Figure (cartoon, rainbow, N blue to C red):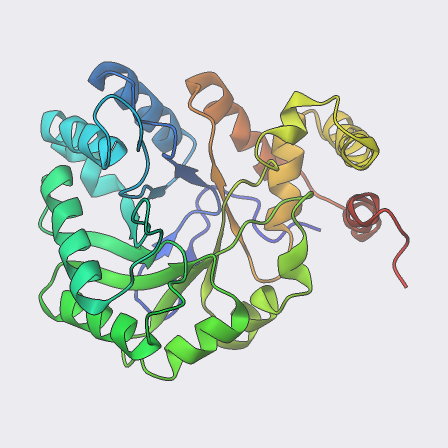
Length: 303
């Protein structure tokens, strides 16, 4: 059982008109590299067929260049190699404002997007997502920001990250622009989207799912965790061994196999391990194997 086993497959981003490959690449740890090293990472992701490149204005915060460091570095790469941009569906996020911590007012989101565009040296990003829900922002405000930016040609599509199903529905009630994406944490260790309504909402509406931290924030590759992590790793290792791929590739394949067609955002910054992720396309999970991973994560058999 594998939903998408080919890098040439394209997954629609909702009804935005955009589509992406089944694996994406995330840049939350891109900041701090030099331009040449950053370009090698981007080229490795393109080499395995990634089209979605996911960044955020908060990525790199606390580093040498502070807020916006990852976007600024990506902008320097794109200025030096502008042809790379043509091969990307480029996504960024806004709304985290240390130490507030969140601001999704219309004025803030519009200004944050404009600041991202300046750092990226671009006139438009393909996808802007609200990074985390601001409980003090009315969803009509968020909708207003998205619609303003879309009308001005500064974004092609809008999405949300870390929203609950109920928060997403509230936004949809005020949004005339189609919502392109949901971005939950989803991995063999972070299984809440299976039961909290997020993946069900994606199946109902056709909104795309972008899965952040598909390796359980690195715990699935580090090993040596608690009993639950060890149990999940043991099943993934069986699948990986049978398929001749790495454990991380088996984990990506597990995420990709759900019928909502989640796109795992590969987070490694090593070109070698980025290329290794392509092994996910060679994994064909049986239904029994997929449920064995889930039961190991649950610590209990399915009811």
